Image (cartoon, rainbow, N blue to C red; front, side, top):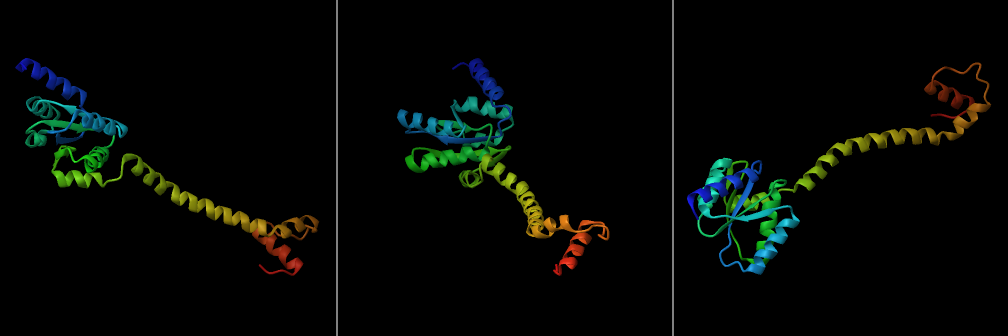
Length: 196
């Protein structure tokens, strides 16, 4: 491959993956074609992509993207696994597939321009996915609102339990009745001989 072509491919890769901040480098030596197809399908289900590049091209692309820490992982036949949406999905999907097939060597990666070794990639896989984090955030917001709604419902239920009082209010002479709901309820209770 000519130098000019390598530079052009590196520039195209850098343009295509500008804005992606999670990459994992894997060695695919010994991976059979059917396994490669299965891996790509498994990754696509999680909105994760995989690209095979020559190491020189990948090195130049990562320099342009500001992901220079990945250079140390570019030895041997390597593939770049990435996701534009969810950093944890990259590691989760790779480790799930590799647990079943044992055909990949996960070398390391980078998240937000910080290098990760294999242990870092495994730690990344333990994080909740984007959807899980959104669910937790919504739960945190909705939880207190549910409590407030429950309190208001309790207050309204309390009024409904005094239904007899409120119905009987219609048959009472209101000329000497006080103003205000709490005072009114107390007045009705006293007239009927009840205590609150």
